[in-house]
Amino acid sequence: MSKLPKIQSSSLDLTCSTRSKGSVRRKSSTSPQKMRMESELTQKLAAERRKLVSIERQRIIAVMDDALYAIQIVSRFAAVCENYEYFENFLGPEIASAFQHLCTTLNYPIDSQSTFDQQKSAEADAIFLVSLKDMTKSKKLGMYSTPAMKRIIGVVKNLIRLIFANRKVFNSLQMDSQPSPTMFNFLETMQELREFVFERLQTTDATEREHMLFLENSLQRERVLQEQIEELDGELSRVKTMDSYQYAEQEGKLSMETQVTLNSEYQASLKQYDALVDNHRRAEVKLRKKNFKMNVEVDNWIKKYDKDMNDRLVALETLGSEYIEEEKKLAKLEEKFAPVEEEYKALLAERIVNEQKRLDKMVREPEKKHIFLLKIPPK
Image 1 (cartoon, helix red, strand yellow):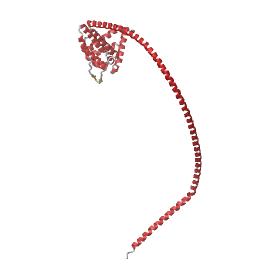
Image 2 (image 1 turned 60 degrees about the vertical axis):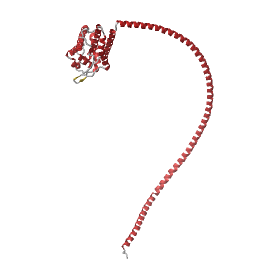
Image 3 (image 1 turned 45 degrees about the vertical axis):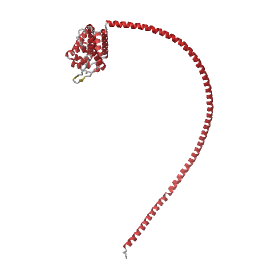
Image 4 (image 1 turned 90 degrees about the vertical axis):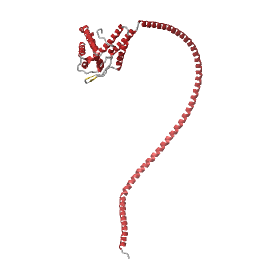
């Protein structure tokens, strides 16, 4: 990091602008919490750096700020290598060539046919780190130990230098990729380290002496208070012991009185219980006698009912047999009187016809007589 160009405090301003390339619609993959943390970092840097008076302290904070920015850049490398064809459109030829050289150095395959997927950024970062470990820590391939590490360091430094010089490229990478959870935790840890170093740099010798004096006074007061607490605890234990003895004596007296009272109450309750048991037994005998009497009466009623029902069934069977015999007689009579009924109906019909003719004849004779009277002229 010693040869990297210096950046101003505004270089950590992580403002995102929406962009579209062809038919690909890109959405911000950073969470609101991450964006809030980075924006708060940007707002604090300028004001905090002005508080440092010494040039050496300002240089220390500037180096830590550059390191944080460089880590944010490196955290996007895995996503670029995983989706090289997508990012190649806005990286520029020089940066795209440097990324291709990095992937070649790490033996990381570039999938030119893959489509961009933000959800794979964390997986790509993990694969990227595995490739880096295989290159730098392999014992079987000794030729990758020192020279490979030197090549990787040179390529990464070149990429960071190029992205430092081109702010728009980093904004685009930030819009379309996000660091893995491991890298994000590392960034948070570095930010905490930077805040701790800044606080230490702000502390002067006089302030530190005041803090040490305050701590010594606090420890001395704490020791005095601890001794007082121990004395009070001892006194309290003695008081508790005396109180416990007195309390035990009082409890013994109260327990004896309570025992006598409970014994008297127990005897009274026992007598009352015996009286209740006798009353209940007498009432039980009466109820048993009454129950027996009721059962006998119910049995008598049941027997009487059974006898009455048997008599009625016998009478019903007798009436049924008589009814069947009467039906047979009725059928014989109907068969016997069927031709007589037919003759009666025929005679009745003939009588009705004769009666109708007679009535018609009686009606016609008055009409003829009236017509004859009408034909006679008056005198």
